[in-house]
Length: 215
Image 1 (cartoon, helix red, strand yellow):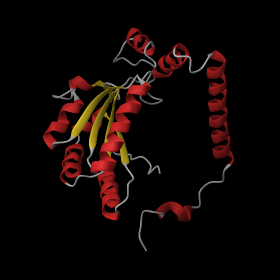
Image 2: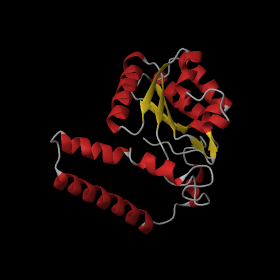
Image 3: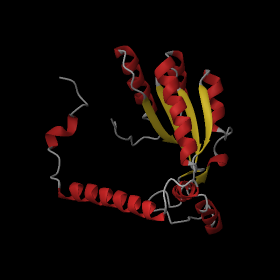
Image 4: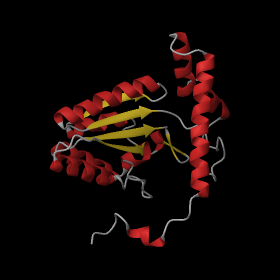
């Protein structure tokens, strides 16, 4: 289940803890995965939530997608501790630093975190170091004034999709024809999703408070 996003930086972390508590309270085996950027680490809710998740042993995986820039500000300019994974020790929480440009490394780290949550009910902090090629938003130029074109191009050489495709070919899992077929299938699926969204009617205004208010 996808529980939606949040307009306030870091504001959704406590909600993830709430979902984790609900899972634990009901005795389920689900795991809540909470995604956020490195900028949210400086928000008080991040620290409060990690502490609560560790105290109550909640099955939550906190996945920090560290792409080095919060909008146009380099992380090291605003954070005294730039290794996000180091924050976990303050809350006696398991943590892993992962190369976010390596899809298989991310898969393996996530699998371990899910197993930890399901078998022991323990939370995990994952710091996934990756990179954002495009601007932060439509108002942010492709490279902006905060990084160079050379920096972006250097990171593109480590593109996770390209690296995974190369690995699959090198290990004989797929040939180029197989990769092309997979690419076409994925593009068709995305195109169909866009078509469905474009052709769907607008939501009923009465749905505005669905799952927000309790009768």
